[in-house]
Image 1 (cartoon, rainbow, N blue to C red):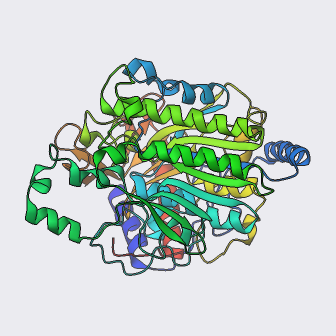
Image 2 (image 1 turned 45 degrees about the vertical axis):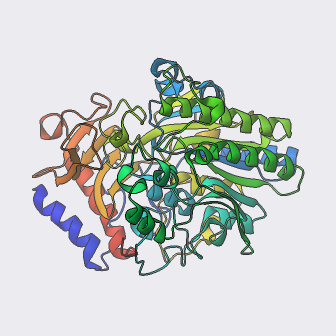
Image 3 (image 1 turned 180 degrees about the vertical axis):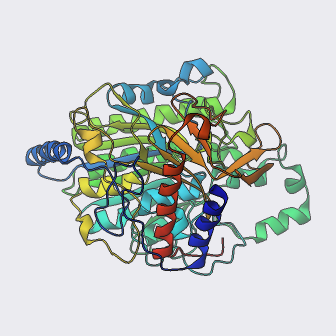
Amino acid sequence: MFKPFIIAVGVLLTSGLHAEIVPDPASELSRATTETFNRQPFIHRPDQDAKASQKLSALEGKTGKQPNILIFLVDDMGYGDPGAFGGGEMIGAATPEMDSLAAEGLKLTSTYSQYTCTPTRAAIYTGRLPARTGLIRPILAGDDLRVNPWEGELTVAGLLSDAGYHSMLVGKWHIGEDEGMRPHDVGFDEFFGFYKAQKEYTQAFDQRRFPDLVLDDDKYARYLSIGSNNDLIYGLADGTTETVEIIDSIEAMAEGDRKLRDYTVSRIAELSKADKPFYISHSFMKVHADNFPSQEFLGASASKFPYRDNMVEVDAYIGDIVRALDDAGVLENTFIFVTSDNGPQMDSWPDSGYTPFRGAKGTTWEGGVRVPGIAYWKGMIEPGRVSDGLFDLMDLFDTALVLGGVDRSALPTDRYWDGIDQTSFLLATEGQRKREHIYNWLGAQLAAIRMREYKAHLLVSLPQEKFLYIDMAAVVPTGLAPWLFNLYIDPKEEYPVGHRLNAWTASLGAELKAHAATFAKFPPKDLGL
């Protein structure tokens, strides 16, 4: 029964046939319906939407402008790292700032990222699955791209900028460093940060970890000849691109997030005096391995391990930036969201985070794609809320556009939009999620779906050694039927329920088929990655 279905999904994704999108709801299990032919189906909640709209209108009448938006994106932070999600002091790294935001806002226990960093960032900024944009993994030195992945794409930063916002990315980008692919080339008015991941700046100086590179003159020279940018960059949408600092030591990189904190704090003070609202993506370099704490935070955690020290550092900086909003008098007009770009990178253990779930970064197990999610907005989001409602980080695209007053119906219809406006879920008292489906992709392969408390896998990553989910894992199909788990009774995905204990296996199969059909209608980009 299911083997032909898996093959059929593969054919739909690769054949380019213009199959019709399956009418929705695709199965009896689904409550989602289509708004337009090129948008992800969602659960309609008109009464809830009206209440949220009234809240926003009242705030705009009070402030005279659209709200500010601040996204904190921590690199490789595990679901269980913040205290509010089970970590904190229990694992030797207290996170009072994140815990406070969670207690005073909405803690989202089913927030989902993509399986690794570049796809997640691309999804947040475009509102589209990476399998559609082609940004399925980091663009690495030596990659020969067939096309610029950003050609023809719209970003939340650019759309908000056109709507009167000042858009700014501070920190890690990791979605291209060549001209035409930089943040200030694709919609951000301002960029202050780094093009790559933290490890890519320090490995050339770390002879204890990489002696065969650092101590071999020939290899070192060849490594430098790759020409990858090693700078802290300042860029503007007019093309201005300047080097603020060349990162030439581990010590310089260790202070990177402190400098990013200082920049965001100073710019909030300046931007808050202007008439424009602002959209800021503050994207930490930490806690991506290899971790080297700032001198101020060396040994600051109870654990004393570098990763835990860096968690304490990141948490402190979040607090500093939130206080900067308060000092500037704009905290009550700023929507804040705190999250991670994927699960912890366990391959670098013990220089890695904690998740209570199976798997880690690089997989579509819950440990790889389920991340902390905190929505905070003083006076707008009711304190103390906790919800297991599904929230995909792509939803930040649509939610930000709605907050910014951008007409989403005017977006192009020649492409598929995967994000969902979850404004009313976040703002309405006792708001309910509007997302019914989470789709997990491994690169260009559809791997799994979550719907309600059920999750079905078509492909799974199986580590051949403990923790080696990237360096030593095999991706295998699940056989005659998808591996189906009930995450309420088995959150660690240890034992499939399938035909023995579940009536919805076929329904989830129908939902997967309907999703695959959208790729036939709207063929994905192939960047050559």
